[in-house]
Image (cartoon, rainbow, N blue to C red):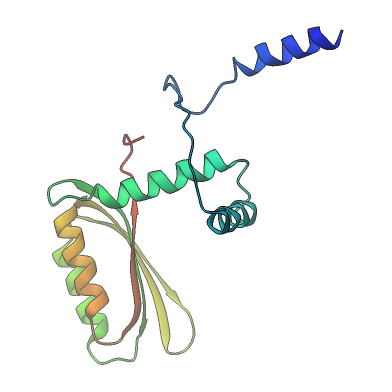
Amino acid sequence: LPDIRLAIGLAARSFLVYPYAMDELIRFGVSLPKKLSQKFDRYISAKKYGSRSEAFRDLIRQKLVEESWGDTEVACGLVSIVYDHHKRNLMEQLTKIQHDAGDVVISSTHVHMDHHHCLEVIIFRGPSAKVKRMADSLIALKGVLHGSITRAPTGGEF
């Protein structure tokens, strides 16, 4: 009976359905220094990954999205900025930059953090060079205390 359960278990495992549609999974080994491996295992645990494989896949996808931004490719993601809304002419400059890039700005959300500070999130989709210029212009404005750009896949990369 244990041999039959083992055979059924192995057969069932070979028919697992993965979220990668018809993609064939490739297995490979990775060698890591012990300290790096331990840190990675803590990262996996903290992020609640089910396996090292899922964590590796996410990290690889993230890096490929970042690297895929060429000057003519379509980029998708968001720019977030925190700024002092009392800074003279800052609101007008933020609005002007977004209007000038109106063909790539999909939406923006404005949140009052406290009496002096606001958070603005601008969602974009368009040519990566134009998106980069817009993001750099927003983040570089005097009065912007923090700014970052988050890249997202446009849909069919993976």
